[in-house]
Amino acid sequence: MYFSVLEVAKLSQRGADQYSLGRTYQLRENMLLRLGIPMGISCIPIFIFLGSFIFLPSDFIFLRLFSMGLFDLWTA
Image (cartoon, rainbow, N blue to C red; front, side):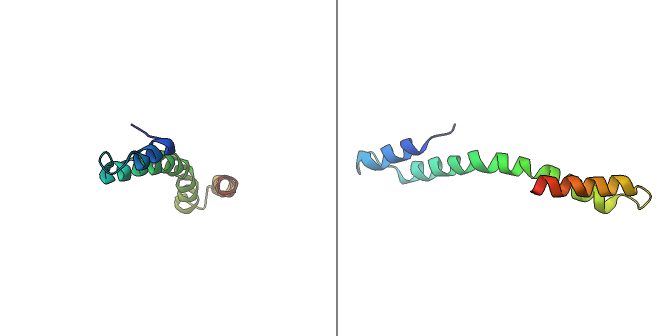
């Protein structure tokens, strides 16, 4: 379950009797995971393109150069 920045702000404004430090850190961690997972998934094609350039034999020159072009395009 993901929580927003507003929920973290509400927790810090409630007061000492209802404030939970562990819950606040959990909410912040969830927000980081919400950003980290799509960023990690978007990096997968980079490794595929680079790996195909490195590990394809030199007989497949077009595919090697094409994969390097896609690598450059994806990282831009």
